[in-house]
Amino acid sequence: KQEVTQIPAALSVPEGENLVLNCSFTDSAIYNLQWFRQDPGKGLTSLLLIQSSQREQTSGRLNASLDKSSGRSTLYIAASQPGDSATYLCAVFSGTYKYIFGTGTRLKVLA
Amino acid sequence: DAGVIQSPRHEVTEMGQEVTLRCKPISGHDYLFWYRQTMMRGLELLIYFNNNVPIDDSGMPEDRFSAKMPNASFSTLKIQPSEPRDSAVYFCASRKSGDYQPQHFGDGTRLSIL
Image 1: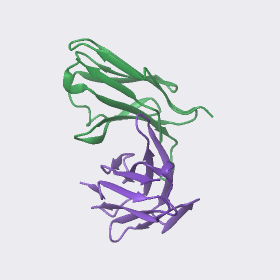
Image 2: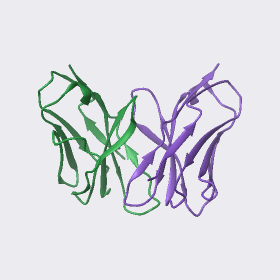
Image 3: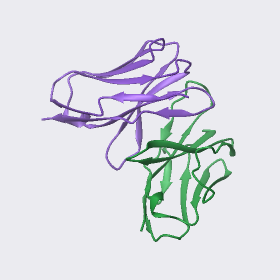
């Protein structure tokens, strides 16, 4: 059974700092991994999707990497801003059209 | 393009009442998912549909929960009778077919059962 873990559960950093969020999964047989952002009272916004054959994806200040063999993905945020404050979730797609979500990392960027 | 649309945004009702949540997926998406999010359990998949047909409802907690998708542009999640432990945020999401298609979420319905 696929399990997805995100560490740390919460993170507080000063503005301008580069930071890394971690996502671990137990079953390496995945099709893709998706990173989401969730603002309070809102739904989930897709940030990046990495296909199983890819090693990384980039969008602006965000870079997500995937290492299937070790069951890990990281989301790198460069030059963090207060507007980046949100909860970040990773979700693993292992077929049967089910996404398994991690419990999220709550990020606060201090001005 | 319009995203996934859910209604109502907030629902407060008394225990024992019937609750109906509604979702309009993105046009052209043939998969629709219902999730529940709580502080204790995080985001849980309740049921998903493919081409309006329920494929996997193993996440539906009890017989009090039911979901329908009468056509490609509309789905409902019904709770009857509702209980306080059903209080949560319920999300609908949709996606296109294909292993590499992203999932798109609505803004959710915040449900409070008193």
